[in-house]
Image 1 (cartoon, one colour):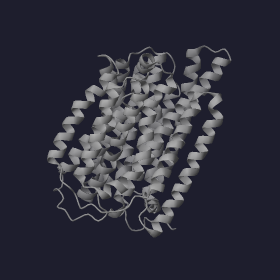
Image 2 (cartoon, one colour):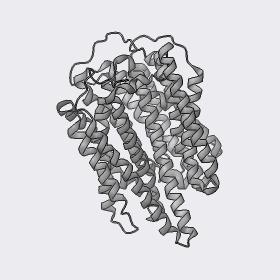
Image 3 (cartoon, rainbow, N blue to C red):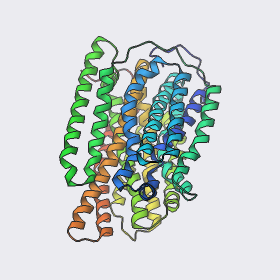
Image 4 (tube, one colour):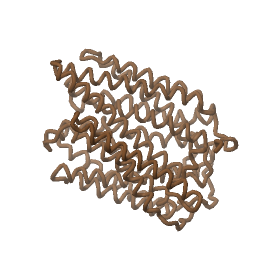
Length: 481
């Protein structure tokens, strides 16, 4: 999608353009798959004979691939038409889903997840860039509320939907069920989708693409190794340091390319204070959300003995509340601005995570449901305003780069959240078992510690929320260089 977009009649106030609706639906279907496998981990460990850490890779590899592919999407979306981008993304996603459904071994399943994720990676920046281009500013909060529905509710509903499907049989059904839905969405999307703007020809800086893949991939891979015991400590620290160093070189290369030509990821977006603050808040909130979404199913299934279906049903009200609130939050944002939403939202996130630090083997299920619902409502009040505020602070030629950076860091934060909680929980559990503590008690203690760390991190969101402006002002938003 081009930086310079042709003037295009926008839809009248109160209407969401058809192109945005179609893209929201497609994005919902593909992003749902990011967390669809979380509930299936115990089932996978059994049928594929793999450890919990290995099984975790069906989720981690998905996020890793997203983090590695999204940096290239800013460049890719400027080169292709809307229809071409959509057809390629959904085609690749369908191929990955079919491969996962038929996977004879765990390695093939992982490969299928990686292919799925590569298709998913293109959809979110495509949706964001299109929305910012065709929706007038006064309607963006409301329309972004529907987008938040796809971006945030899909991962939140993933475990609940997978719990329902897993009752019917094998984990393969998770992919078989998605295939016809994704196929229908692709077909109708291609029939109805219009091209927005003209593609631009630009060259891909392969060195930047390689650095982004190795840097972001290495960082998350190294962190995920931390949970696998003391013998992996040396290599994992080495991989994290190498990943971080590669990202540093990637940043330096982008700064150089900004002066001479077209960077793969335009870091000038980060000089816009509101965008940078929104990005920080989104990363920490996503890290807390993904961390809790990994811990809760493990707690409910391993320590409380619930089935995947019961787990899914217990966590569903929170996901649904988040989804139903998205459009309302968007309308409130259009009317009142961000502060009345983001500050109470971030406080809600911290309170709910603090509540989860008190989990026990006898905690009433209604308390777990209430805390989870509070977390999801807090996230709903936070995500829509920060996406709208952050992207709105950028000039139109930076939308593809802004959505690409947003998407990349969202995945890194999600993968970090997953890696962090699994690492903390495993390390604490292993050390307590070594001291002679019973396995269940040790695991509970590990989960509590992981929630404590998530709570401390989430407290950062309150500070950042207080610094955000109430509305986007394009003038005066660029930070001094």
